[in-house]
Amino acid sequence: MIKGSLVPNITFFDADGAIDEKKTTWHMDWMFQRGLDGLFLTGSYGAGPMMTVEERIRVYDLAAAVAKNYPGKTLLPHVGALRTADAVELAKAAQKRGAAAVGAVPPFYYKFTDSDVKEYYRALLNAVDVPVFAYNNPATSRFTFSVGLVRELIDMGLAGLKDSPLSVGFLSRIAYETKHAGTPFQIILGTSTGWLPFYHMGVRATIAGMNNWAPEIITEMVRATTAGEMDRAEQAYLVMSDLSAKMHFIDSTIASHIGLYTRGYDAGFPRAPMQLPRRDDPMYDKVRQIIAGGFDALGLEMKND
Image (cartoon, rainbow, N blue to C red; front, side, top):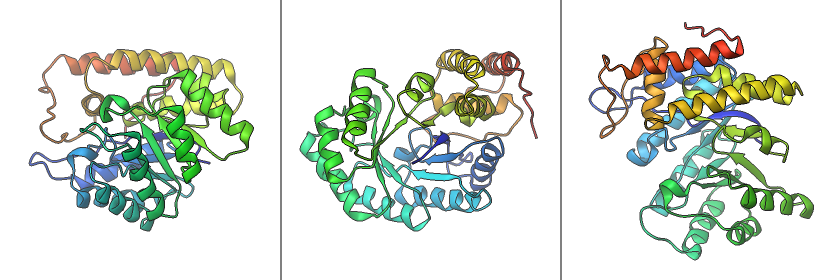
């Protein structure tokens, strides 16, 4: 079972649009030092849909090199792609680089049927020996998983579901059906929102975008929860929820870059057409105040290297 706090980590680019390997590697290491349990690579935050297959595999290489210094950390590469052949190639590359599992959003842009999506995941399941997770993110994929389709995918061998919408009815039904059937199946939250209530349902992993710029806060929330310190866990959860709401005034990838800049780090560039605001934009001061307020509320030191 994948456990703890993972991150849909951003990929850093230079001013010309090439992967900035030095900054991307630094960021992975920086988060691991602050308690992160694993990386969800080249997803939405990581600009996966804007990268070539070769570029995404290169990010897997960088992550594998960093993870060697942190035994027990989880690499969960996102291999979802519009073309099934690309998703299969990415999954095979991820397995070769020591991934604990792979996750894939369904094929996107076009309107696909349940049958199309089943065959897409069948190809992934047949291509690798590591667990395969589906990723339910209808806001980006234009496809929403149903309980019936998830049941069929479980029968095919699907290991779990990363879920971002957090529909209580949908997730609770899957969680309790598989539990009472004795079927090994894991739900991973695709956001830190909902961590505490879903933890009581048996969820043990969250992939939190906030880890990109404030991993200390998510680490403390997960630590307190698993230690049974529920007062502290609830305090951290409320702070996390407040920060998350305040930071949703801009795209999450851009917010991650800005958050790192306001903490004093050179966070490079997102990939065009994404653009960062000018450095004299008052948004940077606003974000710094938001983040500092969260650290103060939990009595944590916002320590920079």
